[in-house]
Image 1 (cartoon, rainbow, N blue to C red):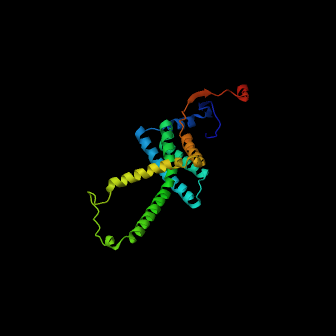
Image 2 (image 1 turned 60 degrees about the horizontal axis):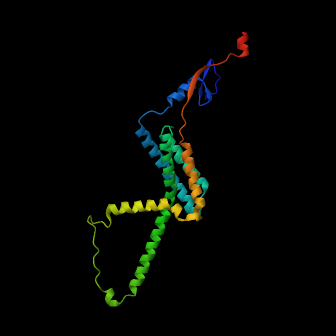
Image 3 (image 1 turned 135 degrees about the horizontal axis):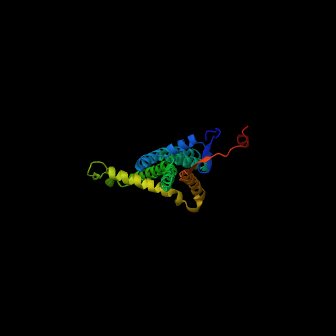
Length: 226
């Protein structure tokens, strides 16, 4: 690790030869603290990287209309590295699952602005059609006093519950969007799979196996006393 000559003895760490000082540094680098703290830090770091990746993915998708595999790989790499850092380089199945989930959510979140835009367009078209239909109604009907719309209990149409339900439905639709196109979106699914694989690969657990100290064999010059 430090590229200095070995003297007297050495240690082996996962098959690599290291000196005593580097061996102690590796042992001290083993993450400490509570598991909950590591999970929270890994989640926060992964969410931050995922949001940045979603903005990047959406920006390129909106500007070009195409999905580039390289961007999915970048998102998966960024989220995977962030989760790895947050876990203190511990890795394992739990962190791999977290990284995969955040990578998928990051990529599909890029579809949310386009879904919202399409919904707004459809609502605008429906309102325009309704207004056009209203202009051809008989005059007697057009002068009728409209009935007041009932307000919600808290005075706000829908309230917070409706907002939460709407956001949840929007997120579920975004998660299902890559599969709704069927066979025509095979390439898109492959792209997402590449990004998720990168996040999974970066969070594999690598156990630290240290053996030693091992005594260095005497060189021919030292053995002859020259």
